[in-house]
Amino acid sequence: MQALISDIHGNRAALESVLRDIEARHADKIYCLGDIVGYGPDPEACIDLVMARAQWSLMGNHDYALLHGPKGFNPLAAEVIRLTADRMRGRTPANTETCPHAAQGNCAACLAIAQPPSARWQYIESLVASHREADVLYVHGSALDPTFEYVYPDRCGPVWSPPRICELLNAIPWLAFCGHTHIPCAIASDLSCHYPQDGANLIRLDPQRKYIVNLGSVGQPRDGDPRASYVLFDERERTIEWRRLPYDIAPVAARIEAMCGIGSWCAKRLWTGQ
Ligand SMILES: [Fe+2]
Image 1 (tube, rainbow, N blue to C red):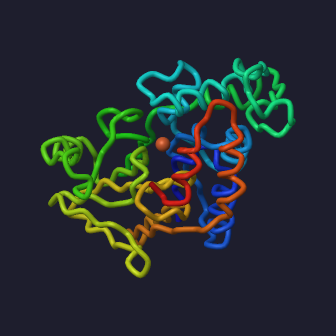
Image 2: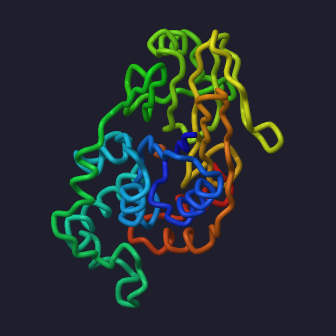
């Protein structure tokens, strides 16, 4: 059984809650579909945990931005990427002098973590865009644009695109797992969308249909449920089970609030899962 995680976004508490559940469920493999960093206060610890526990990880758009700079990001997300890059390079964040928290010694982002060019950095550089095992494809975004394309389900109004979904379904072998939108769902080849919820969080896949399955997000869910999300995939039974795990949001939100230059938006959304 595979445990599939994605969009951790520097949220160590959420990731640890998920990893404990994975252990309890005896999954024998952990695959990560990217976005280890971004938004959250503990990107380094999350990289360490993924390196230690996952068989492999893909490169998400935030991981890519860490290497190549944030392009097309909203200003707050871009600022977190720059802070993370500075910390991982062992530099003092550029905005330390203007940070109101620095003098109090309690600003997480101002505490430059002096890392040499490290295994963490090399690990991010080594991430690949997609992975395939038999008739299953794993991407962060989509089959045709594996790092950057958002595949939205029908609940997401005007960005739901049946013609594009058909193109993507044609491009996958049988099953594709993805993240990126942070919205857990399964889109089947008849264009029906299944949204997991408590009591209906498991589906059995039909081998005659194709599916695009979104795992949801470990560290920043956006489906209105603030609990961390991940998927258990039983290859033999052909079942998908979405798991939701609570974690202590308050300290994570407080540390995001304390990060220099980062507004409270990234913290507030953790409480509402938006
Ligand atoms: Fe993400």
